[in-house]
Length: 449
Image (cartoon, rainbow, N blue to C red; front, side):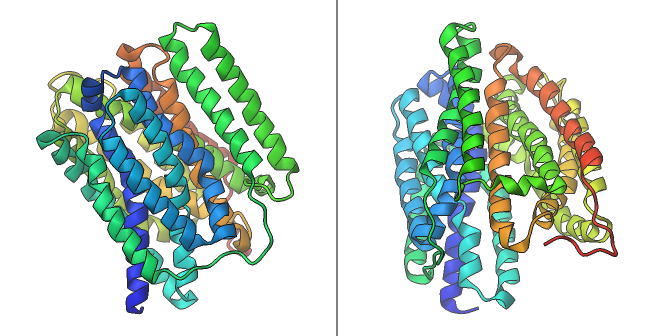
């Protein structure tokens, strides 16, 4: 690996790592954001879902733009925009402006996230690629482990605003390294940007999100319900348009594969459970149980450590025995872990009341993540692996977006209990569906590629 390649790899690690980290650290800051900016539970939902909305609706478009206009160019646009909007989020004087800026941050995240692995693919030879991806995975996981601790410390000793400010110098380094080290590349085929599909996806998800969040707050008045209905209709129009489009943002033909469809249905349920429950749990730990931001960040460290320790071993076993049983048992264990955390009240002891549930959840997640990805990629032709991975990424983000939007349906005071019951059930459903739908390839047969 040359010096230039090392710098290019570091640029992809830094950029994508900051975006992965942003969601977790922002969740830690939600209680203090709510106090400072006078945001209720619905406002906090919008801080998370405003970002998730634009990111999930545009992430596939961001990947397409990189292929068409140049992967390096689009990645650096994303880095620049994410840095600027991070700074503006840090100085936002009102909750409404913070939500608007979070939506803008999601747009630039959608330009940045799909580019990291694509740049590794084009800046390294086939022999170097495996090692480069392994280093990218290890370092982004390390950032995910350390980030909540640093973020929690900054929130406790300083202000929640610092979790946005700290992005700026890191992304400036990322831009400088990427500008000099990353080699430009783009698709040689003539392709069109699917702007109609992107607009329909944004409007559809936006209407659904608005309806789910605002209907309980407005006591189910007409406008939020109309927005919900219009969002559902628009999202169905998006699916119809993508089916008929010659160069779609989402290649729906991939869903003809049973395993691809099964893995994405399981992703919808499992990642909905993950995103929704962690949103509610972090708020509950700080506002009801009595943890500080730093303590809340440290609380989730066992989940990250289990993922780091077990993912490689589970991947090897998955190659040997197939994904089906891992994708069955893992989500069911995760759901049981969520149910263990249901009774958390003020003054709960971490070692006795919190840790067992998180360990069970983390074990279930570690058993699920690698087999799920393996199933997605193994179900399609090798040439379609990039779009298959991107679709699965988008499904996981949409899942979190929708479940977080649902959590206030019975009022903020019931949100934690409802989230535990809903998300625990969703995780178990993911396991049951995996058992019913996923099929291991026969050992004597060649896996479809």
